[in-house]
Amino acid sequence: MSFKILGGELAGRNVETPDTLEVRPLGARVKRTVFDILGEAVVGARIADLFAGAGSFSFEALSRGAAEATMVEKNRTLVDYIYRNSRKLGTDDLIRVYEEDVREYLAHVRPERPYDIIFVDPPYRSGLVPGVLELIEGWPGAGAGSVVLTRVFKKEDISPGCCFVISDERAVGDDKITFFLKTPQ
Image 1 (cartoon, rainbow, N blue to C red):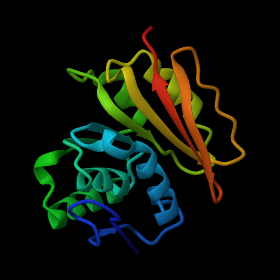
Image 2 (cartoon, rainbow, N blue to C red):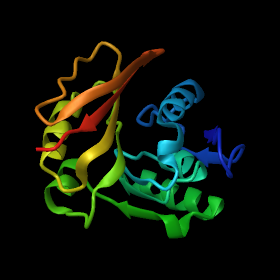
Image 3 (cartoon, one colour):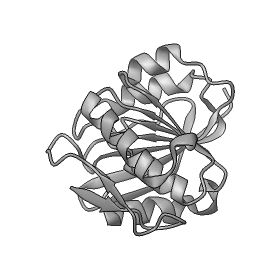
């Protein structure tokens, strides 16, 4: 299965994903909504893509001018797709991939400086977002002003916690996209 990159210098190119129900790449409507809201904030941004899948979000962001993308994905098959897509798109020098559980990554990886945009897109109806947001609250990879973007089933309720404010929220089909801003602690 493949999905087209919608905007930027790689627009029209495909990102390949395995044909399985375990993978839920961003569809065109969701992608358009997310990147319309992010707008120019993507240009030059450092991206952290948690639960990266085959990298659809990161490759769209890189196409639209993001400076770099760190992708965290524990599934070996999906990590292989990330590397395959990156080679095909010519973005090898712009990505870093961690093959591990997101919660473990957040517990031990300490980036030198915060990411500008953090995308949290766990398996559908997994209930992982609240716990991951709690971990992100004290993680040095999220600084004041970092945008934390979540994608969940539209009926899931997400509390922003003490260190986030909701800046935007949209329902797109069965998905709810929420944009949180990290506040100073």
